[in-house]
Image (cartoon, helix red, strand yellow):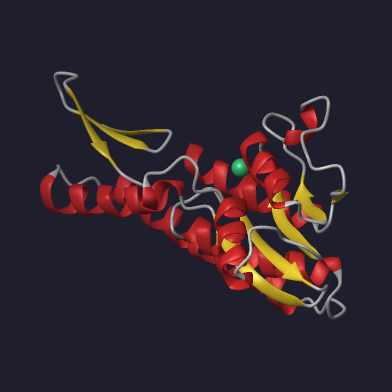
Length: 221
Ligand SMILES: [Zn+2]
């Protein structure tokens, strides 16, 4: 019998001997299971079909999510316009098996100077959050450590670590989509952001939340 617990796959043999196999995503784990079922394990048609139907549903969902965001025409340089760019990066992260969070840093209200997406799995680095990567890219672009006249757009409310980094960057404004009631910086009191940093929340909130919910729903399936 084959079981998925979080992002690990367990092959439970007849004697209940369990072999743990690390896999990065539910998506890739399904492909792995299919290969295992077809080539190594006893062939069971109904199980094979269930994995195939799951893969088809995930591919359909990914394209549907992407299409939904791409077809929308938001006013140029609006909050929604830049949040859609961050969402696109989040979708790409989800496709790579990462928790789908994306971020862009915009200078002067019109130019994207830094992009980032969550890469904690690919880099084996718990600090590789979208915001940190976007901040680093932006400061390298500017050749300066402070993000003056800049706005960070991120699909999920920054965590305490990222809020700390944003404090040091002295960024002018943070715009986020979905709120993070468990790990978001706004849970911390007093606020840890720089005094001059303003915050806008709830931009494309439904799209940002849906992307995360679908991702975690896929992990549990
Ligand atoms: Zn973070």
